[in-house]
Length: 361
Picture (cartoon, one colour):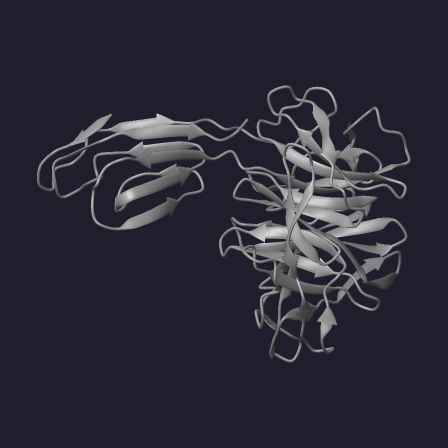
């Protein structure tokens, strides 16, 4: 409970620390992961299963069968797991794994004419702008597009093609130098969006079972550039960023990597050396693992008082401090620290309550 004084007086120091440490050293037994994460698997021609990592026990467990055999990636947004079955956008139930359709993505128009979007492989959420990036696999070149989370439809004219024209999709050309020659990638396995930098990361297969993770900077524009990369990586089929903006990967042979700092230099082989953590020791070699995403450990500070007349939501990656406007029914969402200090001011005598909800299990 805090009390704000008359006029433009200031609130006395109120600091609330919510610690949510995270890394992704995931193992089948105990781990250091302190937030839930999810992975997909499939055996033969069966339907895809959803796996959950419990941050309290440190164990992975099978949630259930999705009821679909053509889901290749997942992306978590607003505490919900999203997926695409072929060309149908939907969600996965956290209790039983079942896929619930939201709607068909539809037809996308671009440089190579209209394309029916029915074979999505990569999916990631841009929480800064509230949409999904996705890749559609076709013969020739895979396509990059954006999906509206509300209805699952392709977002029209949201990307620039190679000629600088607005389009629904973008064709990406990724060439990788390996043993004396360049290989042009045609298969994009997964996507991961770094909300701290605004860069999109793509894992792609360029030769046999070898893959690479590459950063795409300003990917929405005509002349995007390529930045950080990790290569070569064996059997990589899922990537995602954890809360600390370290990238992690899922390997098809029942392993998950430790986190890697993408702010460092591009390297060769480092990612594969650390990838020795088994996901589920009960699964044999016929089970194929892919997809990956992490729930964010967020803490809600809700101020329940009629402070002004407007409604708003204030977001912060780690800390909410001074010099912010407090509005009626405002909800403050932060990661580690919520602090209201001596620079925090309002115009009237107000008493408020701060309710803390730790959303990390």
